[in-house]
Image (cartoon, rainbow, N blue to C red; front, side, top):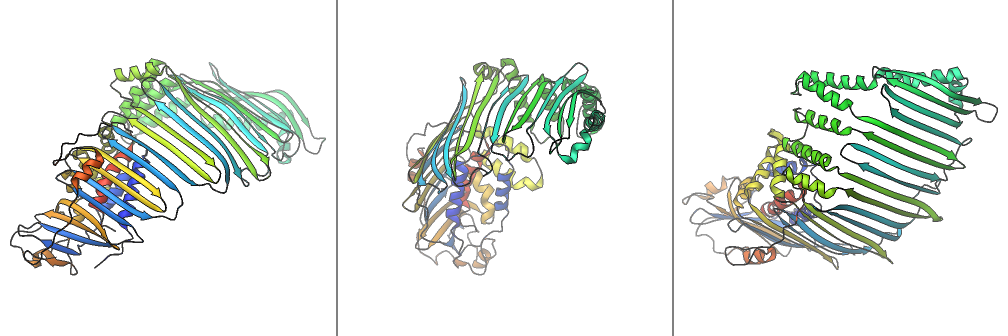
Length: 630
């Protein structure tokens, strides 16, 4: 029987490539193991043919119908610890692309390029991304210039722009910026709003002002000075009441004019809030004390709540003005002494059973924050962006983002003193349009000592011991025990043909074979080889000790890897050879040493902390081990 499986092998290899080329951050470690668990829990597929040998070993053969002109050659040799895959498929895309990625236990490096037809909506494009992080410096830059055809910007907007910055230090956060939107249809007369919030010894003071036209539906609330005060008291008093505080409103100046087409208002006021900060800290303390998941004493909780209360809002200002169809806005925020609040929050998370963060992650986060404070690290992000309509139906967009640091070397020194390795990384990307084509080229290199080991430890901690994550945990532990050495993936797209080649080296691949053996009826898999012949790809799975030496055909038929349609060939009843994996070719491709040669190992040690790399390596082995599954 020949299955029409829609070229599972090619799709699996494409998935492997995506995982390798697009590692994800540690924010999503659960999704990968879930996927692996689903594969591990799939019912065992029966072989199309089983060839039994005199000693009870056997070869299981699975046939798969290919779609189109795809081809695949793949193999996994458990003894040599090698996986190698070479696949081709057709594509209707006219693009040319090439990409390569190499991984080791300490990280990865890769590069790629692409040339494709430019989308009709883009008439001009230039994009540059450049970032670097090591022990000496940390920088990041992004620039974009593009001209888009079509109504990319709202037709009622002539232009818009914004600029600003965010600065974070060991004990303060500040941001300041402004923006303009022109061409927005303005109803009524011009108007403006201003707010200024500052913390005082007794609480908070908010200064506010409003000038210009107001909605007729709101005119009665502002018609007299007394009504204006009552309206503000209701608005701000409710905020204070909900937090067990109080609010006192004072009207500093007031003018109301209903003689025009729309009523206008000119008012300045200030609001004094008292009791809010103390109330908020007490509410936090009550919540923590009543939670059975928090393992802190009441005294410890009171101390942490006091730390949170020490955070100070130096100022928060916001302004908005609309005049002659142009709206401008600005903001300025500074928060001081937030370090005690962050430390308290981390302490609470560390003593909360359902915090969702592993102890290892929390400990490292605390150490990095302490290093930031000790080094007086300052991090700044600045940006500017604008968009406009230079002509009808055309939108021009430009943007810049820059990341800079002060005292970075002192920060990395403080990290080393706490046995925290930050690692190093670099990313470059250049994209530009050239006539009817868009070209892109980029590279990535990241390194962190024992990256995979740290990552898989964190994954296991996140997965926990629940039954729902048992499959994922099993696969992660198998990968930990496999003694992964290196992996490589190359992709080439040219003249309508996609070629993918990949490989991996393990010093103890039997650990992975054991974990994935369920797919072959819990058999002892020693090697897997796949070959395409015409429109059929056959996977040959060599297993050790499938049955005893004197087993009958009925004994074989009773196994999970056989059914009524399986062709069973007993010893002495067949005479043929099976393809074997070219381990020397695989080792040469990977640049590693195998048992049959003396080639030296690759010295590449670049790396990336994150979930995607570990899953990619496991998937690379799993793609060969599970290649015949639908």
